[in-house]
Length: 270
Ligand code: KIV
Image 1 (cartoon, rainbow, N blue to C red):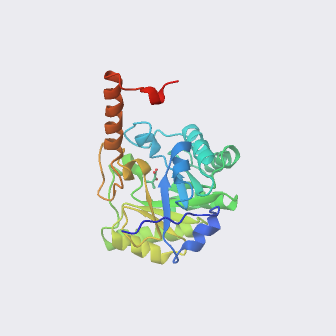
Image 2: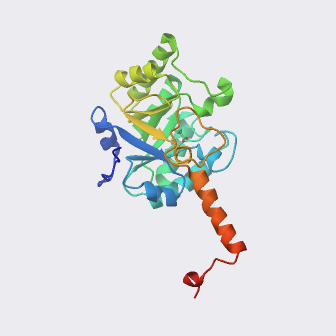
Image 3: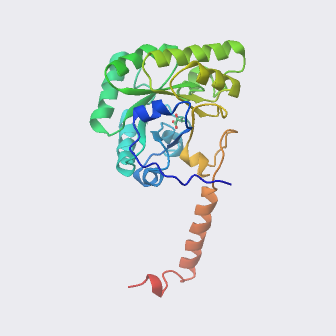
């Protein structure tokens, strides 16, 4: 097994990401705090402060109740912890319903945090909003396919790109987002053939999650990939460690030692 040991040495910018298409796969993980952002610093090109934090950090059933205050709070923390990756703030549901609202909230992101870009869910229907932001010099990452903020309007989380008609629709969405000036697109929960068609149709990088191997990069939610989120495990999540078990075992040792007056021993005593 070969392990990626080479560290990223230079600050990653929007141009770095754009230029990686077709050359080297791009890595992105989520982070919600300075501690984990610091652990990820120098290993991945991008950190997404995803609104998934509403579920894995805040324990809610979906992402819909995340708001700008929450996203800005967590993004500030992530920016304190990680200096090299490009940091993307996920615009929460309701924060970009109109062009003026999107501009107001994206301006807040740049004024109040050190994030480099915002992410917006939606296809063609969001193109004008994305253009408004990119025209105002805000870097935007798109997000198509399975879009968690559409969970109630779509009636659930549904894998996309199962037939040619839907693949064509997704490709049109991706092209509209590219034309609106986005620098990259997250492609979530789509059949691998659809992700490949999208990736080939645009000249900006696609970052896949549950989209197969042919996208220009991959993103995973940190608490899923390290085995801390145990409520359910979608098919596309590979657990690189069993964090939940490691924590429970370690905590069990602590409890045991305290109960048996083994901790603190002389070594940990003044
Ligand atoms: O909120 C999030 O973490 C995301 C990823 C799943 C891409 O949008």
